Length: 143
Image 1 (cartoon, rainbow, N blue to C red):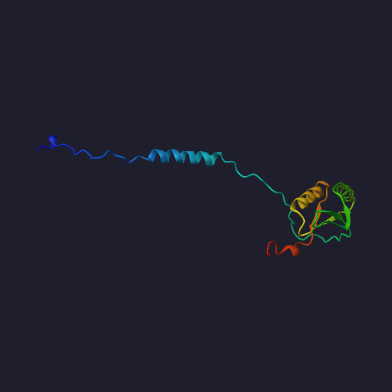
Image 2 (tube, rainbow, N blue to C red):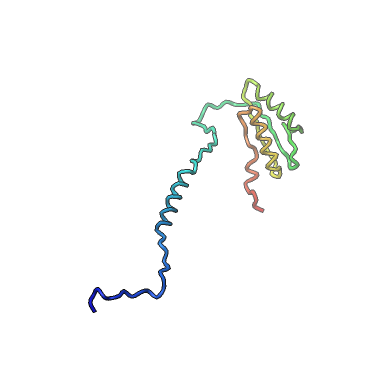
């Protein structure tokens, strides 16, 4: 049989393979668009880090704000409410010399009360805050 008269064999089943190349191309374009549209992380937490050993200036005024397990506030051992604490801390921060405020929460004090107290202290204008007693909480959630 001459070559021109030969028939091609017809497949017994239809072609079911799908061409996925255009699909992959579209997905890659969408991925690039998504990467370009995502904003760069711009959240910054400012932390004042020491630049080196500075001169030692003894500070003889230290006040302690404490929170007990019942979320009650104490300033230098005296029970106070939030308004009184805010007023006292603002008055102390207005002094001409630097104020060192020590913060000592109980291990069973709520996180909410501690966070609100730290925010109150920050809003009162205190620039020197020390966390006291952290060594007692080394075994957090160890029981």
